Image (tube, rainbow, N blue to C red; front, top):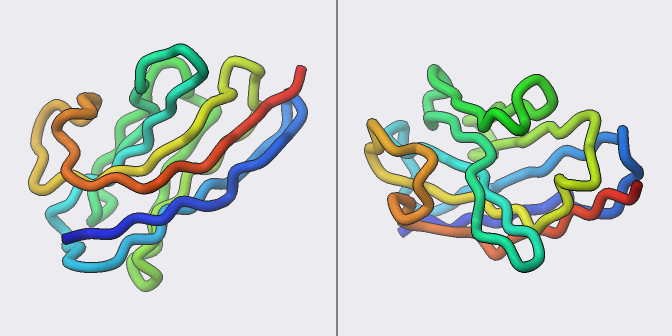
Length: 125
């Protein structure tokens, strides 16, 4: 079992920045991929970014390339999502998720085994 807890959401003006954290506990290991997804009102859950737990591979959705960056601190068992130049369309609940030994399909929510409770990001225009 893996437990995930997100934090760092809030209200920010367009063009501003936020850093989300995802603290992992339990049987987390270097074979887990950690992903960030988001879900806006009336929308389907959308892939944002993912990183291997070892940190040697990352993947970002086209909609956030150049603005969002994932990183991890293994000593703290924490993954971060740095979000810069935020736009109103980034408003959503953001979730982190963990997938065991995932080699393909990092963008597919159904491939992730464990999910956090989410943190709300609201960007005012």
